[in-house]
Length: 82
Image 1: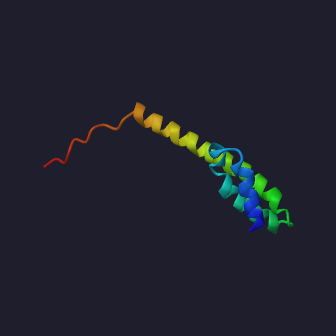
Image 2 (image 1 turned 90 degrees about the vertical axis):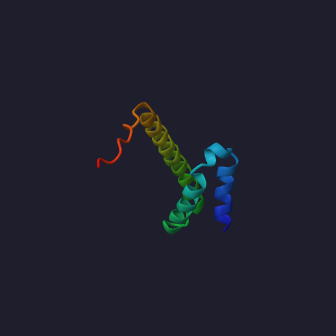
Image 3 (image 1 turned 30 degrees about the vertical axis):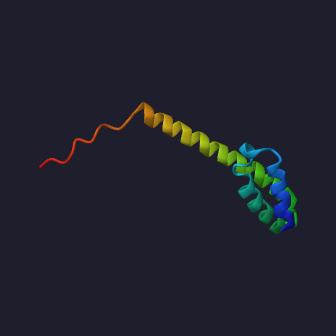
């Protein structure tokens, strides 16, 4: 429990924009670090960085996809032929 609180402390001080993906990554990293040799704090820090990077990349891809859909809207529905 203390490790998760430390991980949230690492992520929370940087603002909400950085925290996106950090908390989830820190939790996963803390568990992985603990299992890998009792390095939960190092794992939490690394997980925070990786989680933030993945969230940022996912947001960028979603933004690009939305821009592409606006640039190329689908053709209007012609209805069903009777």
